[in-house]
Amino acid sequence: MYKFQFFHDTYLIISTYVGEGGTNLPTKEAKLNAIFMREGVPFWVAASGYVILGLIAIGVIPMLFSALKWYHVLVCYVVAPLLGFCNAYGAGLTDWNCAATYGKLGLFIFSAWVGSNGGVIAGLASCGVMMSIVATAADLMQDLKTGHLTGSSPLSMFISQILGTALGCIIAPLTFWMFWNAFDIGDPDGQYSAPYAVIYREMAIIGVEGFSALPSYCLDLCYGFFSLALLLNVVRDVVPSKISGLIPIPMAMAIPFYIGAYFTIDMFIGSLIVYVWERRNKIDADMYAAAMASGLISGDGVWTIPSAVLSLCNVNPPICMSFAST
Image 1 (cartoon, helix red, strand yellow):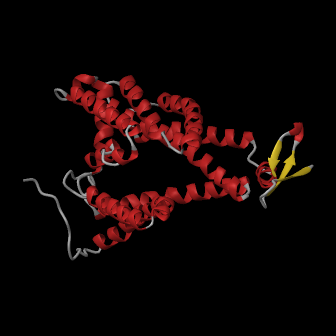
Image 2 (cartoon, rainbow, N blue to C red; image 1 turned 120 degrees about the horizontal axis):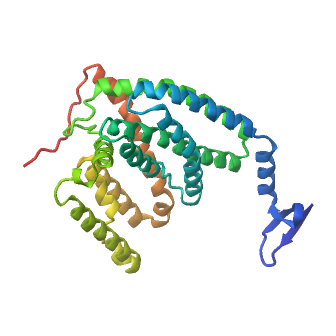
C-alpha cells in the first residue's frame, strides 16, 4: 500500500510504501530491497564453498610453508569468519577496512605459537591467510551494498565475483612476476623498497622473541611519538578551523616514513592544487577534490604496468629524480 505526503509551500512530494507491520519505506528504497531480496546465494552453497576451500588450503599451504602445520591453517579458517563479520560490520559503519589489524593479531599469535623454529614464516603465512579472508568479507559487503543501491542482482554479482577471483588467480601472479623481473623489489634505496615487508617481518620477529628483539629505546620513542600524535589530533579538533589548518596531520607526516621521501613530492603537488582550487572555487573543491585525488592516485598506480613493460624492454627514462644522503 502506498501513501503520499504533501509539504506546503514546496513542490516536494514523497511517495511512501507501507510494508508489513506498518513499516514506512520510500518507494525507491522498497523497490531496491525487493530486487535485492528476490534472489540470493543459499547458505549451504556459501558454507560448502568455504569448507571446500578450507580443506584445499589445509592440504596445500603446509606444503608451501613447512613451518605452518595443518592445524594452524585449520584454526585460521575457524576463527577468520568471526573476525570477518566484525571487519565487514566496521567497514559498513566507517568505510575503513581493518583487515591488516586482524592480520597482525594472527601474526603475533601464530609467531609466538610456533616459536623460534620457523615462527617468523608461520606468522607471516597465517597473517596472509587471515587477511585474505577478513578483507574479502568487507570487500564483498561493500560490493553488494553498491549492487543494492544500483538495483543489481546479488546472484549475478556473486557469480561475477567468482569470475573476477578466478581471473585474479592468473593476473596477480603474472603481475608479480613482471614487477619482480622489471624492478629491484625490496631494495631499501630503490623505488619499490617494499617497506611493509620489512615491518611485518619485524613484527613476526617480535612475536617470536618478544620486546627484547627491539633496538634500544625503541619503545620509549614509540610512546613519545604516539603521545605527540594523539596530542596533535586532539588540538586539531579543539582549536578553530583557521588554526587547525596550520597544524600538521600526524598520519600525513607518518606516510613518508613508511614509503619513502619521494612520496612527499606527490603530496606537495596535490596540496598545492587543492590550495589553488579552494581559493578559486571552494564549493567545487570541497565536492570534487577527493574524487580528483582518487583519480590521480589510481592513474599513478596504473602507470606502473607500462613502466614495468618499458623496464623489461630496457627502455630508460629521459629524466629521473633521486634522493641522496648528505
